[in-house]
Length: 217
Image 1 (cartoon, rainbow, N blue to C red):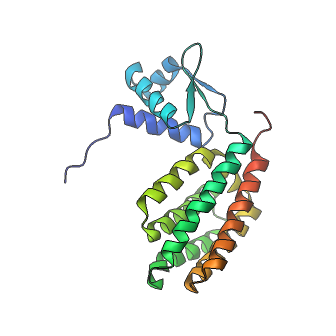
Image 2: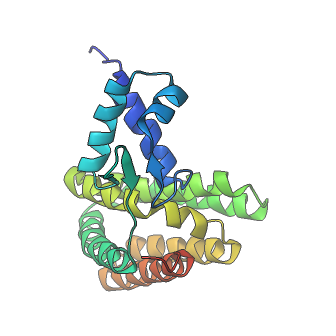
């Protein structure tokens, strides 16, 4: 199998997207073409192509006087995104319950890794990576590729705020316990309980995200 090397446009796109979703480029901030072309050491052509890709993904909007501006996310947008996640993740959980319990082993491993990391007061960046891995593995177990893509796309919009939430020590511990309860419900093949726990988990996450958001726009 031939592994294709990423084009300059794709590399710039991924770098810019990473800076936006991790909050290094703030909502409302303008991305000046010349400035970022120099920063990444590329010509303006691949940069413009990358910016068009970001615009198609809904992360930026063309500014009136050149360049693009990072889109604001409203609280209404956040609420809508979490409602969609509740619906999509209910599909994921229903699919997991059709499978053998052995498919849950990777989730148990990640939970144990999380427990150790919390006990050892691991740095927040490492903990965030473990929590994100749990969600990724949950979608992998369901093996619903299109649903997984939709959820991951939605998460890109809220990641800049979710990262702040996962730096909240109290919420981290609460989320860990919710993950444990969710896997326990899946082990018992208890769909109603699994849905209840996941809905509560997403609601608590949404509430904290909304609290972390600025009041502007």
